[in-house]
Image (cartoon, rainbow, N blue to C red):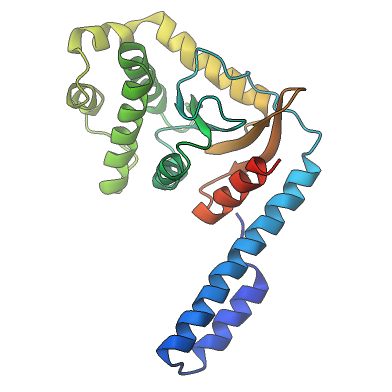
Length: 245
C-alpha cells in the first residue's frame, strides 16, 4: 500500500506543534493537499514510466463487457474484484465516486475474480452480478454491484443473508424466475470461470486489482496497476496521467 510521503508527514507533525490562526491554517492545509496530489502524481508517473511499453495482457474490452461511463474514451479502468473480499468492499465507494466524477471522461469495466479457496460464497455472488447484467444490461449489472457492495459496507460485513442474493435481485427489479434460471445455468458459471482465467492472464494475484489503461495503436497500454484499496487521490492521479497521454 502507498504511504503518505515522509515530507508531508513531517509537515503535519510540525503543524501539530503550533497554534495557528484560522486563515493561516486554511492556507497551510491547502498547501498540504496540493503537495499530496503532486506526490501521488510523481509516484504514478514513475510507475507509468516503467510500464510505458507494457501492454495489457488481459482480454481486450469487447461487447461481452459492461462498460459504464464513456465507452468511447481512450482511458478505461478494468477492475477484477471478489464480492466477498473485504478490501474490495472497502474500495467500492472510492471507485463508485470515480465512476461518478469521471463518467464523461473514462470508461469503467468490472470483471469477476472470486477467490473460491478462501471465499466460499464469492462464486455465487459473482454469478448473481453476471445474471443482473444478462437480464438488464449494463444498468442492471452496476445497480446490482452497487447494491451488493453497498449492503456489505453499510453493515460492516462481507456476508449476505441467506436470501440476500435473491433479495437484491428483487429489489433491483429483476424477474425472479429468469434470475433463478440464470443462476442455475452452466453458461453463467462459464462466464465467471472465463473471467477468472482472464484475470490470471492479466497478472492478477489478488483482489481488488484495478488496471488504468489507455488505448494506443498497439493495444491497451497499462498506465498503472493498482492493487488493494487505494485512496481516491492515487486512482485520480493515475487517471489524469492516462488522460494526458
